[in-house]
Image (cartoon, rainbow, N blue to C red; front, side):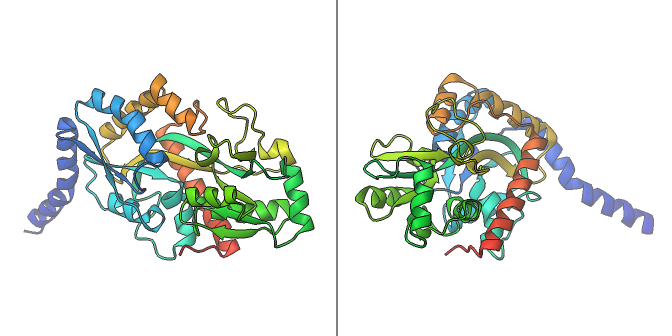
Amino acid sequence: MQRRSLLAATAFAAAPRILLAQAAGSWPARPIRVILPTPPGGPADVILRAVGAHISASLGHPLTPEHRPGAGGTIGAAAAAASPPDGQTLTMSFVGPHGVAPGVYPALSYDPVRDFTHLALLAEIPLTIAVAATSPLRDLGQFFEAARRNPGRIRVGTPGNGTIAHVALEQFRRLAGIEPIHVPYRGGVSAVTDLIAGNIEATMTSLGEVGQNDRLRILAVAAPARLPGWPDLPTFAEAARLDFVASVWIGLSAPAGLPEAISDRLHREATAARTQPDAMERIVALGSAPDRALSRAAFTDFVAREAQRWTAVAREAGARAE
């Protein structure tokens, strides 16, 4: 009797794995839902459209976007983490809910690493510091001089409290030894609008938010090297010998427990899709380097390092989301 009970328990425990293996053999069975934890029209949306067409053509089923914004991307990320790991639900992972959120939200319902199968890094869009084109500040050195002459008076806008730009600004101010005033907005567009109007002195946001605006002057990009699509923009290391690298990175992920066969297939498809000329053109236009490629394991390690890094910075600075 005990033996039959043990066998039954073992079979019951194995049932989910058997069902997932069977699902992997017939996958995909229908259109694939992709949760975007951001509003429509943002970089994650642009990148999904760029790579999604190629992935859909290869798989024979479309990738259907489902926007679930709010709370710094954590609402969408939580919904993705709670979905079945059958390959029919994916998510656009990015630095907000997977890197910054653990440090600025005290009680997340998910772990940014353990609760996901991280598949492929698609883009890394560096942060920048920019001033209005009419500003007397011509370079990063002059910005530092102004900040040191006027402690607590240089206003730097970001897309909001608890965003990567906010937390990175805290790290930047410590590295540079300056005390700018953080001015949070509800999105990067609002910060840029106020900057052009002269209501703040600078903004820290992603290159994609400011790179095409001729009413702004970008002082430096937080990238490890100059970007192929933006060869005239110096890095922070070049402009001020400052070791400051920070990006809005975007990837493709799925719930934890995704079968290996599906995970490997999606990694290959996403990697191939992002290197197609039309997709690469859109990714480069956002300010991302086109040649960044990571294995699944390397991408997972990357997410873990980013979560650890920004959690430490946020907690040290006392940064919190609204």
